[in-house]
Image 1 (cartoon, rainbow, N blue to C red):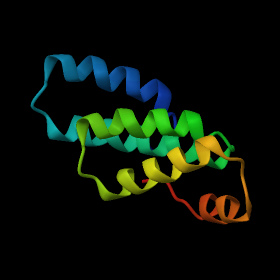
Image 2: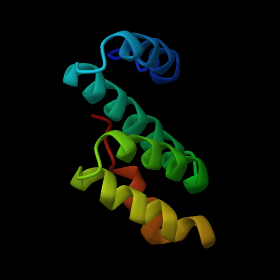
Image 3: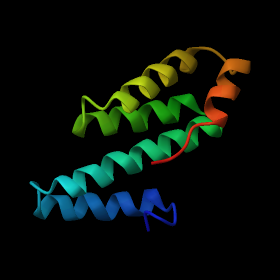
Length: 97
């Protein structure tokens, strides 16, 4: 599911599995990367508010991830203002993990 890009469906399954296996860092990593990827897709669709929510959720599990921190700051800045040329250029070249 991850390689197919079905992150939303995958997240629900990963969270259920995490309830039974809380110490599995691989599950945490997949959850964080799924939220990251959904946030990137939201930014590319022009919805920084939705992206911000995804990045905040991911940082609850991985607070020190520099990529998440950077994108969370970016989404927070553009949540209040509209898209401009810088926004379009930045998100155009973002890639999913």
